[in-house]
Amino acid sequence: MSRGFKERIVRFVFPKISRGYLIRLGAIIITAFVLFRFILLPMHIRGGSMEPTYRDGGFTFCWLQRYLFSEPERFDVVTVRLAGPRIMYLKRVVAFPGETVAFKDGNLYVNDRKMDEPHVVYECDWNKPPVTVKPGHLYVVGDNRSVPMENHQFGQIMKQRITGSPLW
Image 1 (cartoon, rainbow, N blue to C red):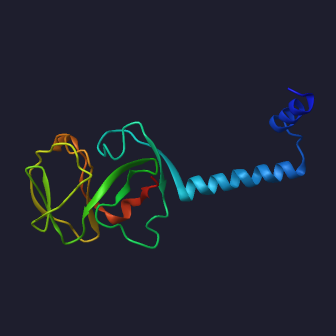
Image 2: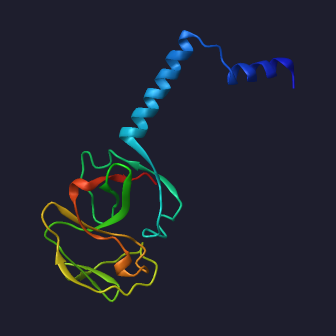
Image 3: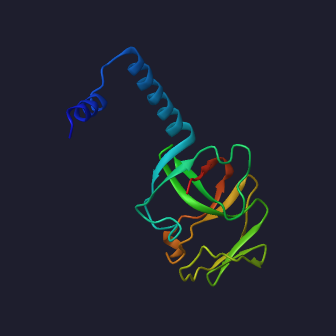
């Protein structure tokens, strides 16, 4: 390596502290804070309730502004805030207020109509009697329904608990 190249590397890694450097550093810190606090929340995925769509141990960002000007649609994957800003679930919206939801022999029925769910690939034997979604609520469920119903978090959630959707 030439001496000039080495000097450029050292200056890049250890820059001179100048007013311009501090302004750029401050702008980067503020931008990162705003971006990762109010727009894209980093998420480490724990648990297999959304497999194979989202794998246990995976990583994504929660797009916090996703539903700022729109409402979730059927089969959207959403992030659901449970307790505090750091604990969230990834779930799929399957029904809206006033609709009736049931599981029969592993199949999802909304208003007595069997729903086509290509994202559900694992065998399921769930059976749950019909329940009507309350006003201001949505019915959410994970994609991995091979997990026994008793070990799976799903059901009606208040619409205000939806914080956004995964970025990818």
